[in-house]
Length: 143
Image 1 (cartoon, one colour):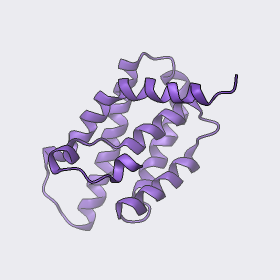
Image 2 (image 1 turned 45 degrees about the vertical axis):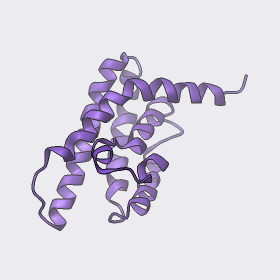
Image 3 (image 1 turned 90 degrees about the vertical axis):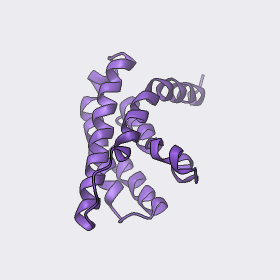
Image 4 (image 1 turned 30 degrees about the vertical axis):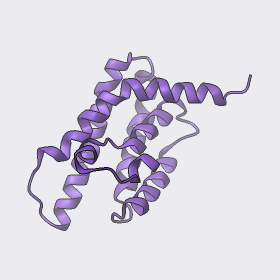
């Protein structure tokens, strides 16, 4: 969550992926019985508060993505990282689309290509994030 709220200059912020969602996807894929939809929803509420968004916006999005991850975790864990990246792309695209729709309901905004850049950077970061979080997970295991 720190990477989500750290102030960065505009060019970097425009391509900054949703680190919280990427981490949440990893944990729901690897530990679906311990990190579920309720976890995703509560992390989404914390993200709403940190980002100053409408309460429940990220909670809804994260819960939906968490639900899809839990339903598909057995298949997705077997795929290589490149094929997992396709799922990550679809998940991040769905999240950005829902954010765009919710923001458009509140106040119509023009379509911008820059709004969709975090989807691409998040997908490209997945092959780096997955092994890093796997390493952190292996450190935490006893024995």
